Length: 343
Image 1 (spheres, rainbow, N blue to C red):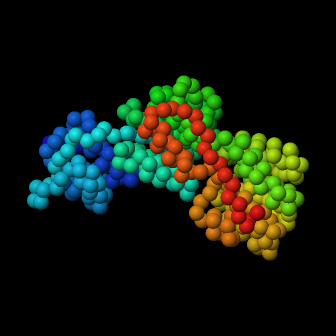
Image 2 (image 1 turned 120 degrees about the vertical axis):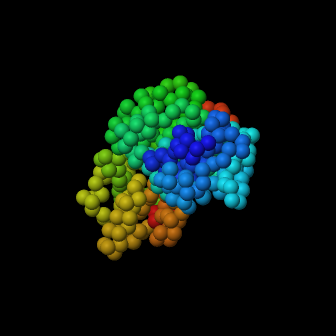
Image 3 (image 1 turned 45 degrees about the horizontal axis):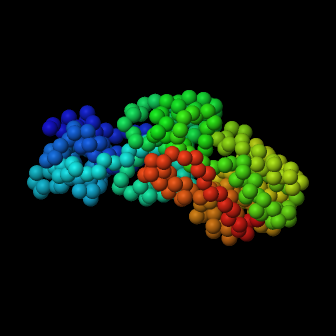
């Protein structure tokens, strides 16, 4: 087989967040499964791969090392790389689509990959909360995936997301983090119950909250965060007679002694801390601070930031278990409070 013929079924997708060496490896595995590459076939050299696919030599070498470790190929000194094994277990092939890449999304990804191990290949894409890109990525994908795992969060246009999602075979679909009401059929979902979660979390710390005058939650006007979070926040404040405010622009919001700020975005968290310290106020005494989504860094900032958070590691593991068991269900992810000195 000519090296140039490999371009017919081995390619690198620039839109994909999957490392290029894994894209290379997965393409070769898929070609073997489809019978396009057979046992004892000679693969392109490192230099040929680098030239044909416009990737670095390091990327090409890393891809081949990955395949050697799996026992798919062998290298023969002075001759090149050959396919040595075509009788491996057919892999799970996942189309993974995240709205953004962040510290907690990385936890989900790492947990999913670790739980599936080498039994799965994952094509990983990020659409940056942009519905147009979300739609394009799904429409451009062929139907040879065994599973589509999708996080549906958008700044604008999300009201039509169910239309493109409904084009995916439901037996292959797992919605992650958020359910959409208009998605029909029997499909999997590992989701957060946003209204119930924020209400229950605040209820667990209402004694601490009672030391403050006003609760403020920061949700920018144009945001991908579900409105159910605000609904749960309002319901809690009204039930327990807390003064409260929904803040749409933190830059225009004063910070006063006796207030608790609930921050959903990392940038807002940094801004609150900086402005609080600049006014010689003390976090955890003068100002209360709660941050959405647990990350390791929040355990140590200012001796610990109180967080309300889904168990992202459990979320990734639950998706992996659903994929392996082939049992499609709707499961709410555990949500917990990590109470620390910032409140």
